[in-house]
Length: 373
Image (tube, rainbow, N blue to C red):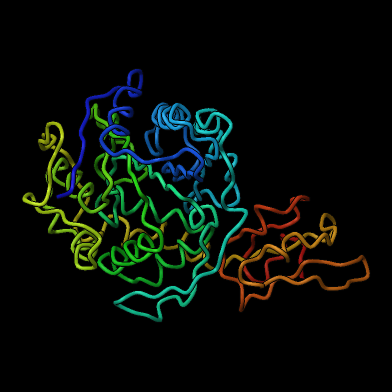
């Protein structure tokens, strides 16, 4: 039987709730690699409630340190509006300071893996996943309690979408084609490496048209679990929604990733629906039919890295680290220049993140603005 903890909390006293979470779901961390992944959609101050609040992250890191953890990494790959700006996103959100010296840009090093889904094994044959995710002995996910115009809610399953660096997320958005199919893709990404433990920032949540909306809602809770399906089922009920209506949850359950039915859960705390909580349309129309978002997806997918000849030193860092072997150094009159093969590039943009000279920029094919070929 799955357990889900619901603890009253504010951002001033959330350390107590996080301690209760670690007691309810103990994990040995001493001498092990621990990855803590908050939800970092984009750069935004904590008061916007679009990212995991720094107080929750700090409490988690402090608990890990108290338990003897020494090899801690705090990181995420920001979403559509955060490509190439990992450090800036974390700093603006207050998460760099809250990480207590353990923040790392996990987008700098990725591993290419085969990827297939039960619905369409040819959707995207390969994806690039942050190496820190795959090498973690203990993977702790810190979702934010929010709505989402395409998946209805953002929780434990959806937070794992950030294990993919760069424009792959936009690419999968586009290829999925429908909200229901995209919810299945979310689960397929999640099961690459399911987290071991979840702590949800539900102190201030978001309702209406999330995940970057303006309708904030005081909830005053921290949730925790060691199973994503059970946890998202509880979040769904708190939002006043039958979890069986979400394809994301029914699909995950069919794959044996967990159960969300009442009889399979033991709730530690008080579970009750939030009165008059505003949900987005269940058909995903809030985002699916947004012309602005579709144009953003198209632009993200089309962009490819190009090296600025004036800045590129031909050091080969991008070539050595590219998980898809899509970059090569080409001799030019001015010296070696990194050039991308657009057919091999998977859009992880690790090269742009890691370039020591900041020589890589992202542009649509044929765009002269990057100074490349």
